[in-house]
Image 1 (cartoon, rainbow, N blue to C red):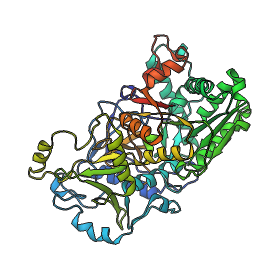
Image 2 (cartoon, rainbow, N blue to C red):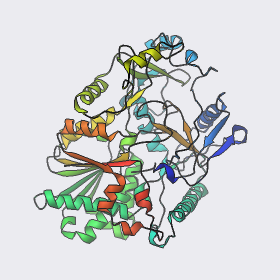
Image 3 (cartoon, helix red, strand yellow):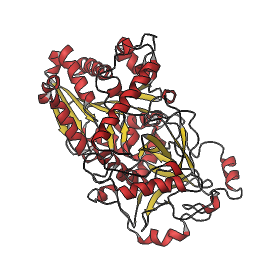
Image 4 (cartoon, rainbow, N blue to C red):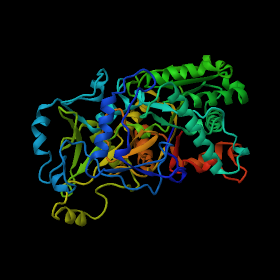
Length: 531
């Protein structure tokens, strides 16, 4: 669980940096991997040299924390051509054609690939096309050049913060900034890296109190429903450094020894590097060595899961939905027919966005299930007056499709897997319900990278694979209804703060002024539980 807290939590002011002052010296990632130095330099040169990007805003050195008053980002296209800003010369969409005429031949000739087909590739693909969700999946999770396997470093603050001794929340901000700097200085002392992708999680910032709150929820519900007939089996999807796992097991061992004897903690981790880190973290300290017999690290993608689990279990998915791949859908404003986004990668490695009237089975099923399951209104390109929408579409230079809607097809696939292989599971998930400074569209992602310890946002998800974080908000009213329809389970959605007030010992994280960072941060997050 990680990264974007409440928008008001930014400490440092935004700075404007002219491109002439930037030094494009890109180094290794600190793990012996080739960082594609010249390629990364080219990415930033092109990002900053476009006619509308002569200046670019860089944000707080604390990544994944986005201010509500952040200045609008400049428009960025990954095209070799110098284009005008108006819609009539857009490089991805002409008003009268579904496909750009100058790339239609390549589109017809290049093969369609999927992220699974690219997993064995060590180089970023060219001369191919793929669905938007496959492009995002490949960008984030490809084992050889993906963002998570190769770029991400999770911040660890070292010793736990002593909130009770702090004067107020600004002092916590100050101490956090100092530890952030010291942490990255230590990494740079070993291997300097101007493009290190560093982010933090609430588990790390508020340990052990955050993990203890999760543990109390698990133990209480386990005792009410499954004790003593069944063991306490916990699956965690994406465990980061393994800190949450250790905090939960420490609490159960110390305060619920009878339950601890029957506890099994299983981590499902797609990243081999993080799986190794979790194993070493488990065995590193004397206090955690006692957990070895209770933990299993499973290095595989949950979407490749094929083991039936016939017993009750708890499934933790804390802030992982935001990095699940989404499909891009646009609609014809007159017929309201959906079109599905496809990304073309040409011979130069540039990206071109196409839309097809053929909807693949996964996206088509999502649209059907959402239509049948959702009883509450939600933001959508076709919501509102049909007359006004058609009128606007008839204006000169108006686009002939709506803005994109990003639909969480990967999340729907997770619900299918939980239903098929974990029929007796109970889900606990937390994620961001809104993200400021997102790209254009409905349910649109924030796309950003780090350079010289500053966060650099861009305005399209179709950027150099592996160097940019792509994170989506979660519409909990939609996914709650879809989860209920797919799994048949009862659910409850609550604010992140409300969950912690119920299950955490909030006095542990309160400052002398009465402010409580563990409650006031992550205001833009929600928690969903199922029974």
